[in-house]
Every structure is written in structure tokens, then in C-alpha cells.
Length: 490
DNA sequence: AACATGCGCAACCGCTCGGAT
DNA sequence: CATCCGAGCGGTTGCGCATGT
Image (cartoon, rainbow, N blue to C red; front, side):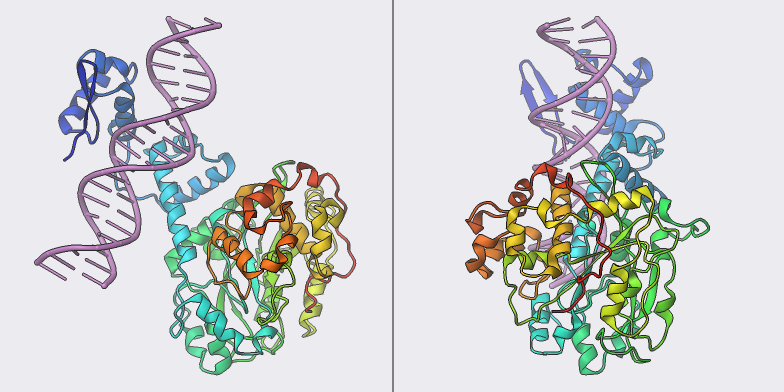
């Protein structure tokens, strides 16, 4: 065992792992004098350790009633940590005070480890057999002109590491192990093609991802809570057509869709910012033969659900087309915001209608809902001038608004927002993607929205964020109830 | 079996803050 | 008011173990 010693003046301070004898001395000291005046331990010559070191040793290891080291956090503890972290931030001591036997260091390490685990789960998608990496998938897709009909979409949960997503061209969904029915069903060309785009997570990783979404409990309808973790109650199995324009058949693959919950706050108003949620089974999901885009199902809400928004994105360009500007590339990151509650959706078999019916859903009159609507309906006039100049069509304007909302809210919301574009290898980190932008679209450098600089290479997520003014929320108007063009394919 | 790698955790460091003296 | 000290936090390091090759 290595034990560092540091010479300080006449005395030698010991550092590093504690010896059992040292622990004994420390315990005896506390028994006699109490857990206080830690510096006197050294001045009394009892231990060649700093008071701070003694205190930490006592608090983290020797204090009675502490849980044994290596004692894993239980699901209940994890849930509590997640919830409290969402409420309090990184107030580890405060959080630990609610967890008997846990110290702030325990909680901090747990959180740190958990974050890393989630990140790994998100960045390490397991590709089904026959596919080696994400970029290969994209190139495979590009060979098939039908792929443009997929309209890729993403389910986005924009907080921190949990902005997990399904991405790229074609439907990507998260599903857990055990969906062999789906994999096995991919026997024809079309389904194989789709199969290439599905990112899989094993159950544990999926749990990590899902449990990372906090504030679940207060949105779960009464009677729905059970011994089952809430995030697991929301796994659904749906029939999903390989192509939204293709009627579902009995051969359609099954995919489990995890409902993603999340919240963010408008840093300026402190109000609820965004939440994806779905509380109840969607009746439309079970209709065989219904030509429903699975995304339609995803955004059907529970009638009593709080104001919430499902973020989804659908690529509007063919894979062989380059975005017309970098701006547009970014806007495909998060294309659309569906505002809840959605009263009803069209079951007409027309995907565009379905989506439009969602977009046109009547607005709730609840204050929170209205407020949130406003936040999401920034007009172009409230955005940096460059936006209106560089947004090449109406399709992305509302989406840009939402993007600006994210950008404005704070930097952390953007840190894991990923840019999904056919040209981008999937699962690059944000910074990696941004680094690639100038290379891919160098001639559009001046159009790089949000950046005042004409030098595209100087652009980064941070520069975008800092270049937005703080009063971007000052000019708000209600969402336009007119027909949305969000989902009108180009 | 040996080695490499990854992961979790204990412990530390630097810093800030607030209360006591 | 200045200083000291304890508490707390974010970040980091290094060790030991588990797992993979």
C-alpha cells in the first residue's frame, strides 16, 4: 500500500489510504471529544493527518450507520437521487441527508459514475448484425432512393446526457433486449434496411437512459404508480411500418418505444420548459392496418397530462441533398415541437394529415400551458437577424424557434444536442459534429446562424449560445393555430 | 495464464462560504 | 474587521478489482 508523506515544517503529514490503526485512533478521538475540532487531532499529536483529512475520513468511512462500501445504490435510492438532483442541483450533502447511510461523497461518486454510464450507453449503440458502424448505415441508406420516404425522425429529450436519441435517416428507436421478434422479422430488403438504423441498448443501458429522466413521479397519473419503476411502465410495444407511407401489415416489425420524460426550465422565468410525456396507451397504436406514423402515436397525450411537448424531428431532405445552409442542418436537429394536449389525431391514413392534426391541436387554457406555448412560439423577429435570412423555407422556422429556445435557455441544454444529418456520422459528440460543419459546408460559412463571426471555424455551440441576446424571450406571441407546415415534406 | 483495459471508489486538492472568535 | 476553522462542492487522481483478449 502506498502512503504518501509530506514534510511540512517540522512535522510529517501523512496522505493516502488510511491504516486500520489510524482509524482506531480517529474513532477513539471522536468518542472522547466528539466529531469536532478536527485540527486538534494533529496538534495533539494523535495523527499526522490534516484536520480536513480526518473529518473526511470520519464523515465518509468511520461514522456509525454508514452503509458498507460497495453497497450499491438501490433503485429507490437512485430514484431519490435523480429526483433530488433535478430539484436541488448538485447539492450532494443535501441529497445525502435524505439517504440514510450515504455521504455526499457517495452521492457524488454515484452520480458521476451514473452519468458516465449513461453517456457510454448513448455513445455506444449496438448495431444489429450486418452493420458495423453508424456511418456505414448511412451510406447503405443512401443507395436506396426509398430511404428518402422514411423521413428520419428523432425523439429528443433535451436535458443533459439523456438527450438520447434516435437519429439519422429513417426511424430510430430505442428498444431493449428481447426484441428478437423485430430482428427476426427483418427478412426482406426493406426491413433489413430499416434494421440497420435501429440502435439497440441492452436492458441495463436502457434503464440507465430512462431512469435518468427525472421528475417522473409527479407526472405519473394516480393509480399508475406501482412497484414497477415508473419509467418501465411506459414501455410500449407498437407496430411500426417500415415506411410511414406504407400501410402497416401483420409483418410489420415490433418495436418497443420507451417514453421519454424530461423537463427543462426557462432560466429566465423559471417556468416549466419542456417535457416529453405520454401517460396512457395510445389506442391508435394497436390498430392493425392503420397507417399511422409511429411518431403520431408517440405524441398522443394523456388527457390530464400537464403541458408538455414532444420533440421530434423528421428529415425533410433526401440523403443525397445537402442542406442549403448550415442553418438548415442545425434546424434538422430538432425540427418540430408538438404541443400537448393533442385532442385527437387523424386516422385517415395520411401521414401529413396526422402530423398537421397534431400541430393544430387546440391550445390549453391553463396558465402554465399558455406560458409554455409562448416560450415555444418565438417569432423570427425575436431571433437574430441572420435567422430569417438564412432559413430557406417556412418548414424550419418554428423549429428554429425551438432551437433558439434551447440555445437561449442555457448552455447545458445544448451540450448533448446532437446534429443529425445524413452526412454526419451518427453519435459524434456535439463538438465533433460542430468541428465537421465547416468542412462539409464551407461555402456556407457566412450563413452560420447565431454566429456573428463570418469565420465559420470560430463557431461552436458556445459561440452560438453566447451570441444570443438575453431578451430573446421578451417578445412572445401565442402559437399560431393555423395549419402548421412543420411536417409537410419538401 | 498473462496481460491490457475499463470501471468504481476512496481520497485528495483547491476553492468558496459562513459562523465563531 | 480580520482571521480561523469547519463544511461543502467540483474536479481529479490513483488504486484495486473485474472483465476482456
